[in-house]
Image 1 (cartoon, helix red, strand yellow):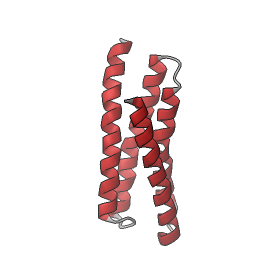
Image 2 (cartoon, rainbow, N blue to C red):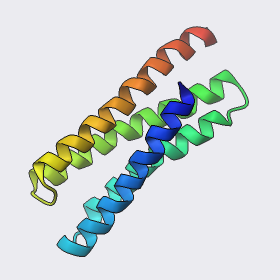
Image 3 (cartoon, rainbow, N blue to C red):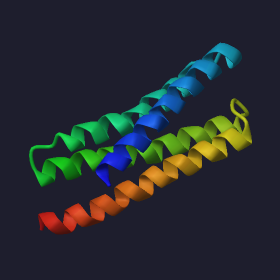
Length: 117
């Protein structure tokens, strides 16, 4: 499951980079889109770190950070949608993908938290 999460979070990060490039080029918006770029790419970076975790607690901590970053990313996507920097359909599609990542990570966290105790 973690490799699937890595692939999905990496693909999502690529989409975040492309979206940032589009927003900054077309809309000349740099502050909100930079926040989205940071949180959206941080998901995959933390998943990658989790996969290299030296203990189950280390793994779980990194997945927890990635989970929180996915929640933050959904916030920025909603804000950019509601302020009309990105189209509703695009935002909703990306929010759905971020939500899928969140659900996978939450499931992993539930399992790893049980294993740690």
